[in-house]
Image (cartoon, rainbow, N blue to C red; front, side, top):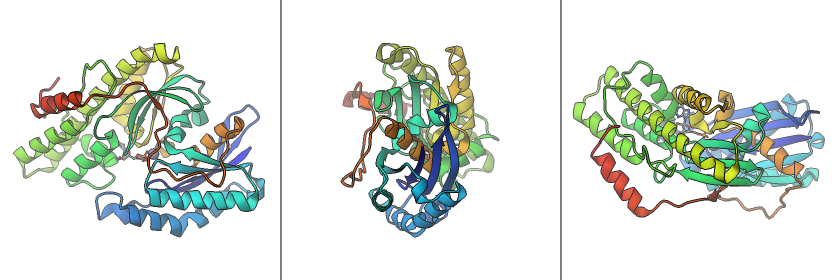
Length: 365
Ligand code: KG4
Ligand code: ZN
Protein backbone atom coordinates (compact mmCIF):
# COMPACT_ATOMS: atom_id res chain seq x y z
CA UNK A 1 0.00 0.00 0.00
CA UNK A 2 1.48 3.35 -1.11
CA UNK A 3 -0.11 6.57 0.08
CA UNK A 4 0.59 10.21 -0.71
CA UNK A 5 0.22 12.58 2.27
CA UNK A 6 -0.38 16.32 1.84
CA UNK A 7 0.00 18.87 4.67
CA UNK A 8 -0.84 22.59 4.40
CA UNK A 9 -2.64 23.45 7.66
CA UNK A 10 -0.09 25.97 8.97
CA UNK A 11 3.25 27.29 7.74
CA UNK A 12 4.77 24.11 6.33
CA UNK A 13 3.96 22.89 2.84
CA UNK A 14 4.61 19.17 2.84
CA UNK A 15 4.13 16.06 0.70
CA UNK A 16 5.33 12.52 1.35
CA UNK A 17 4.95 8.95 0.17
CA UNK A 18 4.64 6.25 2.82
CA UNK A 19 4.36 2.56 2.10
CA UNK A 20 3.46 -0.47 4.22
CA UNK A 21 5.99 -3.29 4.38
CA UNK A 22 5.25 -7.03 4.59
CA UNK A 23 5.19 -6.96 8.40
CA UNK A 24 2.62 -4.15 8.48
CA UNK A 25 5.19 -1.51 9.46
CA UNK A 26 5.32 1.81 7.66
CA UNK A 27 8.30 3.03 5.66
CA UNK A 28 8.82 6.59 4.46
CA UNK A 29 9.81 6.61 0.78
CA UNK A 30 9.96 10.39 0.46
CA UNK A 31 9.22 13.29 2.77
CA UNK A 32 9.35 16.78 1.29
CA UNK A 33 8.87 19.77 3.59
CA UNK A 34 9.09 23.41 2.58
CA UNK A 35 9.00 25.77 5.53
CA UNK A 36 7.58 29.26 5.08
CA UNK A 37 9.42 30.59 8.13
CA UNK A 38 11.29 33.20 6.08
CA UNK A 39 8.02 34.61 4.69
CA UNK A 40 6.50 35.07 8.16
CA UNK A 41 9.61 35.99 10.18
CA UNK A 42 9.17 39.74 9.73
CA UNK A 43 5.72 39.55 11.35
CA UNK A 44 6.76 37.40 14.33
CA UNK A 45 4.07 34.84 13.59
CA UNK A 46 2.16 33.12 10.82
CA UNK A 47 0.14 35.46 8.57
CA UNK A 48 -2.76 33.36 7.20
CA UNK A 49 -3.02 35.12 3.81
CA UNK A 50 0.70 34.81 3.16
CA UNK A 51 0.61 31.16 4.22
CA UNK A 52 -2.24 30.24 1.85
CA UNK A 53 -0.56 31.99 -1.07
CA UNK A 54 2.78 30.31 -0.37
CA UNK A 55 1.11 26.87 -0.28
CA UNK A 56 -0.48 27.49 -3.70
CA UNK A 57 2.86 28.50 -5.18
CA UNK A 58 4.79 25.37 -4.24
CA UNK A 59 2.42 22.49 -3.54
CA UNK A 60 2.20 21.03 -7.08
CA UNK A 61 5.97 20.93 -7.49
CA UNK A 62 6.42 19.51 -4.01
CA UNK A 63 4.01 16.64 -4.74
CA UNK A 64 5.79 15.94 -8.03
CA UNK A 65 9.09 15.83 -6.14
CA UNK A 66 7.70 13.49 -3.46
CA UNK A 67 6.50 11.10 -6.18
CA UNK A 68 9.80 11.33 -8.11
CA UNK A 69 11.92 10.74 -5.00
CA UNK A 70 9.83 7.67 -4.19
CA UNK A 71 10.27 6.48 -7.80
CA UNK A 72 6.51 6.53 -8.36
CA UNK A 73 3.76 7.94 -10.53
CA UNK A 74 0.22 8.77 -9.42
CA UNK A 75 -0.90 5.41 -10.82
CA UNK A 76 1.27 3.57 -8.26
CA UNK A 77 -0.64 5.04 -5.32
CA UNK A 78 -3.32 3.25 -3.35
CA UNK A 79 -4.71 6.38 -1.78
CA UNK A 80 -4.34 10.09 -1.27
CA UNK A 81 -4.40 11.46 2.26
CA UNK A 82 -4.71 15.16 2.95
CA UNK A 83 -4.92 17.15 6.17
CA UNK A 84 -8.43 18.66 6.16
CA UNK A 85 -7.94 20.56 9.44
CA UNK A 86 -7.72 21.85 12.07
CA UNK A 87 -5.69 24.81 10.85
CA UNK A 88 -5.70 28.04 8.90
CA UNK A 89 -8.62 27.75 6.53
CA UNK A 90 -6.88 29.22 3.46
CA UNK A 91 -4.02 26.75 3.67
CA UNK A 92 -6.29 23.81 4.47
CA UNK A 93 -8.36 24.58 1.36
CA UNK A 94 -5.26 24.63 -0.84
CA UNK A 95 -4.23 21.15 0.31
CA UNK A 96 -7.72 19.69 0.36
CA UNK A 97 -8.72 20.88 -3.12
CA UNK A 98 -5.39 19.60 -4.46
CA UNK A 99 -5.88 16.20 -2.79
CA UNK A 100 -9.45 15.89 -4.01
CA UNK A 101 -8.44 16.77 -7.56
CA UNK A 102 -5.62 14.22 -7.60
CA UNK A 103 -7.94 11.57 -6.17
CA UNK A 104 -10.58 12.31 -8.81
CA UNK A 105 -8.28 12.28 -11.81
CA UNK A 106 -6.39 9.19 -10.68
CA UNK A 107 -9.52 7.41 -9.34
CA UNK A 108 -7.81 6.71 -6.02
CA UNK A 109 -9.50 6.74 -2.62
CA UNK A 110 -9.31 9.98 -0.67
CA UNK A 111 -8.73 10.20 3.09
CA UNK A 112 -9.43 13.55 4.80
CA UNK A 113 -7.06 13.37 7.76
CA UNK A 114 -7.29 15.24 11.05
CA UNK A 115 -3.88 16.89 11.52
CA UNK A 116 -3.93 16.15 15.28
CA UNK A 117 -4.78 12.51 14.72
CA UNK A 118 -1.79 12.35 12.38
CA UNK A 119 0.52 13.69 15.14
CA UNK A 120 -1.08 11.16 17.51
CA UNK A 121 -0.43 8.15 15.24
CA UNK A 122 3.15 9.06 14.20
CA UNK A 123 4.60 6.84 16.96
CA UNK A 124 3.08 3.83 15.21
CA UNK A 125 4.84 4.77 11.97
CA UNK A 126 8.23 5.32 13.62
CA UNK A 127 8.12 2.65 16.33
CA UNK A 128 5.33 0.25 15.36
CA UNK A 129 3.76 1.00 18.75
CA UNK A 130 0.69 -0.97 19.87
CA UNK A 131 -2.43 0.62 21.40
CA UNK A 132 -3.20 1.90 23.99
CA UNK A 133 -0.72 4.64 24.84
CA UNK A 134 -0.66 7.97 26.63
CA UNK A 135 -0.08 10.85 24.24
CA UNK A 136 1.25 14.27 25.15
CA UNK A 137 0.40 16.36 22.10
CA UNK A 138 2.10 19.74 22.31
CA UNK A 139 2.34 22.06 19.35
CA UNK A 140 1.88 25.72 18.49
CA UNK A 141 -1.89 25.50 18.61
CA UNK A 142 -2.63 22.50 20.84
CA UNK A 143 -1.71 21.01 24.19
CA UNK A 144 -3.53 17.86 25.23
CA UNK A 145 -3.05 14.64 27.14
CA UNK A 146 -4.92 11.90 25.33
CA UNK A 147 -5.53 8.19 25.87
CA UNK A 148 -5.01 6.71 22.40
CA UNK A 149 -7.00 3.46 22.38
CA UNK A 150 -7.23 2.77 18.67
CA UNK A 151 -7.62 4.50 15.31
CA UNK A 152 -10.45 6.96 15.88
CA UNK A 153 -10.61 6.16 19.61
CA UNK A 154 -9.13 9.06 21.52
CA UNK A 155 -10.08 10.16 25.02
CA UNK A 156 -8.92 13.59 26.11
CA UNK A 157 -7.74 13.36 29.70
CA UNK A 158 -6.73 17.00 29.94
CA UNK A 159 -5.50 20.00 28.02
CA UNK A 160 -4.65 23.65 28.23
CA UNK A 161 -7.24 26.14 29.39
CA UNK A 162 -5.42 29.04 27.73
CA UNK A 163 -2.19 29.07 25.67
CA UNK A 164 -0.68 26.02 23.99
CA UNK A 165 2.86 25.18 25.12
CA UNK A 166 4.36 26.00 21.72
CA UNK A 167 2.43 29.26 21.70
CA UNK A 168 3.88 30.13 25.12
CA UNK A 169 7.42 29.43 23.80
CA UNK A 170 6.67 31.60 20.74
CA UNK A 171 5.29 34.48 22.84
CA UNK A 172 8.21 34.37 25.27
CA UNK A 173 10.64 34.43 22.34
CA UNK A 174 8.90 37.46 20.84
CA UNK A 175 8.93 39.23 24.20
CA UNK A 176 12.68 38.63 24.54
CA UNK A 177 13.45 39.70 20.97
CA UNK A 178 14.28 36.19 19.76
CA UNK A 179 13.41 34.93 16.28
CA UNK A 180 10.28 33.10 15.19
CA UNK A 181 9.40 30.25 15.69
CA UNK A 182 10.34 30.69 19.30
CA UNK A 183 10.60 27.15 20.63
CA UNK A 184 13.99 26.26 19.18
CA UNK A 185 15.33 29.79 19.91
CA UNK A 186 14.28 29.67 23.57
CA UNK A 187 15.78 26.21 23.92
CA UNK A 188 19.07 27.36 22.38
CA UNK A 189 19.24 30.46 24.59
CA UNK A 190 18.36 28.38 27.68
CA UNK A 191 21.47 26.24 27.19
CA UNK A 192 23.66 29.02 28.52
CA UNK A 193 21.24 30.13 31.24
CA UNK A 194 20.60 29.60 34.92
CA UNK A 195 17.19 27.92 35.38
CA UNK A 196 17.06 28.94 39.05
CA UNK A 197 17.65 32.67 38.72
CA UNK A 198 13.96 33.54 38.35
CA UNK A 199 11.33 31.91 40.57
CA UNK A 200 8.60 31.59 37.97
CA UNK A 201 5.25 29.99 38.87
CA UNK A 202 4.37 26.38 38.07
CA UNK A 203 0.70 26.89 37.13
CA UNK A 204 -1.62 23.91 37.81
CA UNK A 205 1.06 21.94 39.67
CA UNK A 206 -0.61 19.39 41.91
CA UNK A 207 -4.09 19.88 40.44
CA UNK A 208 -6.26 16.77 40.34
CA UNK A 209 -7.15 17.03 36.64
CA UNK A 210 -4.26 16.91 34.14
CA UNK A 211 -4.91 20.36 32.68
CA UNK A 212 -2.45 23.11 31.79
CA UNK A 213 -2.39 26.88 32.08
CA UNK A 214 0.47 28.73 30.43
CA UNK A 215 -0.63 32.34 30.15
CA UNK A 216 0.17 33.26 33.78
CA UNK A 217 3.66 31.84 33.41
CA UNK A 218 4.24 33.99 30.36
CA UNK A 219 2.94 37.05 32.23
CA UNK A 220 5.23 36.31 35.18
CA UNK A 221 8.19 36.12 32.81
CA UNK A 222 7.22 39.42 31.20
CA UNK A 223 7.10 41.12 34.61
CA UNK A 224 10.57 39.81 35.50
CA UNK A 225 11.93 40.90 32.12
CA UNK A 226 10.49 44.41 32.55
CA UNK A 227 11.83 44.63 36.10
CA UNK A 228 15.46 44.03 35.05
CA UNK A 229 15.37 45.74 31.62
CA UNK A 230 17.46 46.52 29.62
CA UNK A 231 18.27 42.84 29.16
CA UNK A 232 21.79 41.56 28.67
CA UNK A 233 22.54 38.42 26.69
CA UNK A 234 22.89 36.55 30.01
CA UNK A 235 19.55 37.90 31.29
CA UNK A 236 17.82 36.51 28.21
CA UNK A 237 19.54 33.15 28.67
CA UNK A 238 18.53 33.01 32.35
CA UNK A 239 14.94 33.99 31.58
CA UNK A 240 14.73 31.30 28.88
CA UNK A 241 16.25 28.67 31.15
CA UNK A 242 13.90 29.59 34.02
CA UNK A 243 10.88 29.53 31.70
CA UNK A 244 11.81 26.19 30.16
CA UNK A 245 12.43 24.67 33.61
CA UNK A 246 8.98 25.81 34.75
CA UNK A 247 7.34 24.32 31.65
CA UNK A 248 9.18 21.02 32.13
CA UNK A 249 8.13 20.85 35.81
CA UNK A 250 4.51 21.49 34.89
CA UNK A 251 4.48 18.97 32.05
CA UNK A 252 6.06 16.24 34.19
CA UNK A 253 3.47 16.84 36.93
CA UNK A 254 0.54 16.89 34.50
CA UNK A 255 1.75 13.71 32.79
CA UNK A 256 2.01 12.04 36.21
CA UNK A 257 -1.66 12.80 36.84
CA UNK A 258 -2.64 11.67 33.33
CA UNK A 259 -0.84 8.36 33.86
CA UNK A 260 -2.90 7.89 37.02
CA UNK A 261 -6.13 8.64 35.13
CA UNK A 262 -5.18 6.46 32.15
CA UNK A 263 -5.94 3.04 33.67
CA UNK A 264 -9.69 3.42 34.24
CA UNK A 265 -10.10 4.89 30.75
CA UNK A 266 -7.89 2.64 28.65
CA UNK A 267 -6.09 -0.02 30.71
CA UNK A 268 -2.31 -0.40 30.84
CA UNK A 269 -0.40 1.87 28.43
CA UNK A 270 2.33 0.48 26.18
CA UNK A 271 4.24 3.76 26.25
CA UNK A 272 4.33 7.46 26.92
CA UNK A 273 4.34 9.25 23.57
CA UNK A 274 5.38 12.86 23.00
CA UNK A 275 4.25 14.41 19.70
CA UNK A 276 3.87 17.81 18.05
CA UNK A 277 6.52 20.47 17.50
CA UNK A 278 7.26 20.97 21.21
CA UNK A 279 8.30 17.30 21.45
CA UNK A 280 11.50 18.45 19.72
CA UNK A 281 12.56 20.14 22.98
CA UNK A 282 15.56 18.29 24.41
CA UNK A 283 15.02 19.26 28.07
CA UNK A 284 11.42 18.11 27.87
CA UNK A 285 12.38 14.84 26.17
CA UNK A 286 14.97 14.10 28.84
CA UNK A 287 12.53 14.79 31.67
CA UNK A 288 9.80 12.70 30.05
CA UNK A 289 12.19 9.82 29.35
CA UNK A 290 13.14 9.78 33.03
CA UNK A 291 9.53 9.96 34.10
CA UNK A 292 8.40 7.22 31.71
CA UNK A 293 11.24 5.05 33.00
CA UNK A 294 10.03 5.54 36.59
CA UNK A 295 6.60 4.33 35.48
CA UNK A 296 8.17 1.33 33.73
CA UNK A 297 7.23 2.65 30.28
CA UNK A 298 9.29 3.56 27.24
CA UNK A 299 9.17 7.17 26.04
CA UNK A 300 8.43 7.21 22.34
CA UNK A 301 9.09 10.55 20.67
CA UNK A 302 9.39 10.85 16.89
CA UNK A 303 12.77 11.73 15.38
CA UNK A 304 13.07 15.52 15.10
CA UNK A 305 11.99 15.92 11.44
CA UNK A 306 8.76 14.07 12.27
CA UNK A 307 7.97 16.14 15.39
CA UNK A 308 7.00 19.22 13.43
CA UNK A 309 4.43 19.28 10.66
CA UNK A 310 5.17 16.92 7.78
CA UNK A 311 3.51 14.93 5.02
CA UNK A 312 4.64 11.49 6.22
CA UNK A 313 2.41 11.66 9.29
CA UNK A 314 -0.58 12.55 7.10
CA UNK A 315 0.19 9.67 4.73
CA UNK A 316 0.54 7.28 7.68
CA UNK A 317 -2.78 8.38 9.23
CA UNK A 318 -4.25 7.81 5.76
CA UNK A 319 -2.85 4.27 5.73
CA UNK A 320 -4.25 3.56 9.21
CA UNK A 321 -7.71 4.69 8.06
CA UNK A 322 -7.57 3.01 4.64
CA UNK A 323 -6.73 -0.30 6.31
CA UNK A 324 -10.00 0.02 8.21
CA UNK A 325 -11.93 0.99 5.08
CA UNK A 326 -12.38 4.57 6.29
CA UNK A 327 -12.38 6.83 3.23
CA UNK A 328 -13.89 10.20 2.35
CA UNK A 329 -15.43 11.67 -0.77
CA UNK A 330 -15.39 14.92 -2.67
CA UNK A 331 -17.73 16.55 -0.15
CA UNK A 332 -15.21 16.30 2.74
CA UNK A 333 -15.15 19.76 4.36
CA UNK A 334 -12.13 21.87 5.26
CA UNK A 335 -12.30 22.38 9.01
CA UNK A 336 -10.57 25.29 10.76
CA UNK A 337 -11.60 23.63 14.06
CA UNK A 338 -11.76 19.87 14.36
CA UNK A 339 -11.42 18.33 17.82
CA UNK A 340 -10.01 14.82 17.45
CA UNK A 341 -10.39 13.50 20.97
CA UNK A 342 -13.58 13.00 22.89
CA UNK A 343 -13.68 15.17 26.00
CA UNK A 344 -13.58 13.53 29.40
CA UNK A 345 -13.91 16.72 31.36
CA UNK A 346 -14.29 20.46 30.73
CA UNK A 347 -12.51 22.90 33.08
CA UNK A 348 -14.68 25.40 34.91
CA UNK A 349 -14.35 29.15 34.52
CA UNK A 350 -13.62 29.49 38.24
CA UNK A 351 -10.49 27.32 37.80
CA UNK A 352 -9.21 29.78 35.24
CA UNK A 353 -9.75 32.70 37.62
CA UNK A 354 -7.99 30.87 40.46
CA UNK A 355 -5.01 29.96 38.32
CA UNK A 356 -4.61 33.51 37.03
CA UNK A 357 -4.77 34.89 40.57
CA UNK A 358 -2.18 32.39 41.70
CA UNK A 359 0.09 33.03 38.72
CA UNK A 360 -0.22 36.80 39.20
CA UNK A 361 1.02 36.31 42.78
CA UNK A 362 3.97 34.50 41.15
CA UNK A 363 4.22 31.84 43.82
CA UNK A 364 6.86 29.31 42.86
CA UNK A 365 6.79 25.62 43.70
O1 KG4 B 1 3.43 20.74 15.41
P1 KG4 B 1 4.04 22.02 14.95
O2 KG4 B 1 5.18 21.96 13.97
O3 KG4 B 1 2.98 22.96 14.31
C1 KG4 B 1 1.69 23.08 14.83
O4 KG4 B 1 0.84 22.27 14.42
O5 KG4 B 1 1.53 23.97 15.70
O6 KG4 B 1 4.52 22.82 16.26
C2 KG4 B 1 5.12 24.09 16.16
C3 KG4 B 1 5.35 24.61 17.58
C4 KG4 B 1 5.83 26.06 17.61
O7 KG4 B 1 5.09 26.76 18.59
C5 KG4 B 1 7.29 25.95 18.02
O8 KG4 B 1 7.78 27.07 18.71
C6 KG4 B 1 7.27 24.71 18.88
O9 KG4 B 1 6.37 23.83 18.23
N1 KG4 B 1 8.61 24.11 18.97
C7 KG4 B 1 9.33 24.01 20.12
C8 KG4 B 1 10.58 23.46 19.76
N2 KG4 B 1 10.58 23.25 18.41
C9 KG4 B 1 9.36 23.64 17.95
N3 KG4 B 1 9.01 24.33 21.39
C10 KG4 B 1 9.96 24.12 22.33
N4 KG4 B 1 11.18 23.63 22.07
C11 KG4 B 1 11.55 23.29 20.80
N5 KG4 B 1 12.77 22.79 20.56
ZN1 ZN C 1 1.19 20.17 13.99
